[in-house]
Image (cartoon, rainbow, N blue to C red):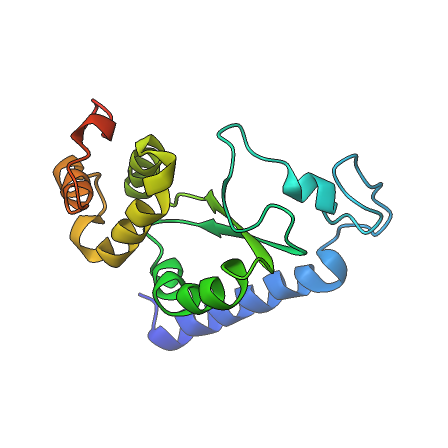
Length: 172
């Protein structure tokens, strides 16, 4: 039977070995050739970052704004929720509404519940997307879970000022 001391020592030793492999790029040589999707340093080019996905972007603010901010968010992420409730309103007021920033939301669903909620927000009319997105984040604790709970997802939609049943996919 292993003692706690031996188990902890073994984990520490394994950690040191793994971290040693991470030095100097973890064995990746610095002479990798840039791809068509990256610059000389291997980072994506601005043009590549600005390409829309197959579903298109949800963009807010002036199209010709000097700065574009792209948010990759999951509707089940508590940090995304915190950002949306505390920081986003200030950012919107000071920069998006004044035409200084164009703000793009790209869904990055983590788990099936987030994917289902993202599908529902995409089914809403374009003018209601941000309001429904906000509802899902504000009410996150009511509908998130290990399993997709269709009734809970629909209940958030029904909290909108008008009934959006016709915009909820039939799978729900």
